[in-house]
Image (tube, one colour):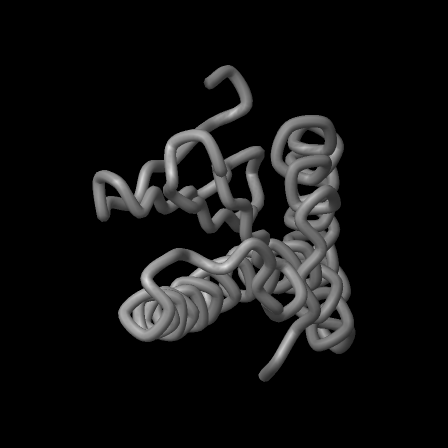
Length: 141
């Protein structure tokens, strides 16, 4: 199952809608128990209602993880291309075409470049050509 990834929506879901979702899950569970115990024939409808929120949250987290892995893979390919360009020309390119979601920035004063992408949950992954390492930066970094 492929689900869309919306970074800001995931942050909104995780931090601002957590209490309403918890209330909804508890209310759904209460309805489920009521329908199963008192009105036994309607348990399928109750199970469907109860399963909606956990499925929604799991698909958001799964899509966030899959998109993070995909962007890391694509970034690795871009790094290979940039290093190949440097070995051919002797300098990093000023501008480099990147796929949607990955940003390339060259620091002309230091002679290095940075790749960055947002993973969601207010986290950005950044690669520095000087240190050759990935750094995770949160909202407060």
